[in-house]
Image (cartoon, rainbow, N blue to C red; front, side):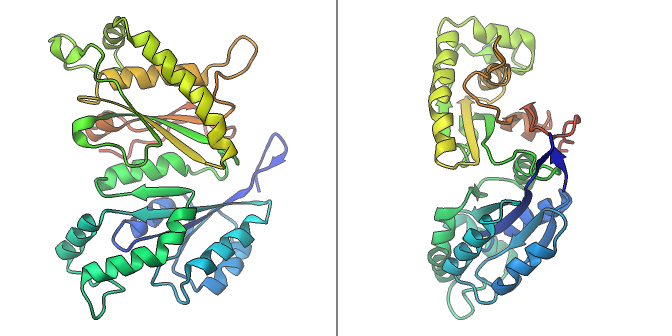
Length: 327
């Protein structure tokens, strides 16, 4: 197993569960592309043996179709695996709104695994109840209700990079810009509204550009409330991020929205990332520990203008940025 600064890097073990039709199989395929060894729906009694024999990061699909499925048994296996200090074990839960799941099943004409003799709605409700303890215990809940496949790939790639255990046991912070009309990011832990700031959209010279352009960022920063707002956000994160770590959270998504998700929110995310990822004169990071920090501009990615990138990389991350999954 690789080491960082002569310290053993725990091998990543992912248990992927969730509701049928919510994207679990897609998540497993993406993880396989990220060099995880993927096993879908093995008998629960084989989990320990699978993990013991694996030599790479492992992603194991576990859901209501699994032989001998029982949420309490899955949680017991999870706790047992976590006792091994050489493993970094996480539980991922994929979900979606009932109306979305119904629409997906209607469109594909697939049979719900728990609705062999009843309606799809009844099957969804039964599975939701069966897997509720797993959702409650999950390290990461992925709601795919309004997440198209390229965005799901971007989301999974940003959190489970090809290098094993790169983020260690700490927190990974994602700073995301988005557009309110396109919907709130369901994965966000904190959502902030930047729509009160002056809008470059109404300047013909700036409207086609984005907050990644210096003149757009300067225009937004000229608003008298911009700097106080940025300072307030920074202060909030200095307070809450260490508490997230105390609670055992592994992922924190901070989302900043504006009307189009291209100017004001992008400017703020970039400025905040610069603050959090740059050490002060004493070598201390400004309220963000030593945690990896990533930047995600949701609407720019949907327009094909890039994907996620690191503002501060994990300790053993490659020097290259990931290829954009958005074509």
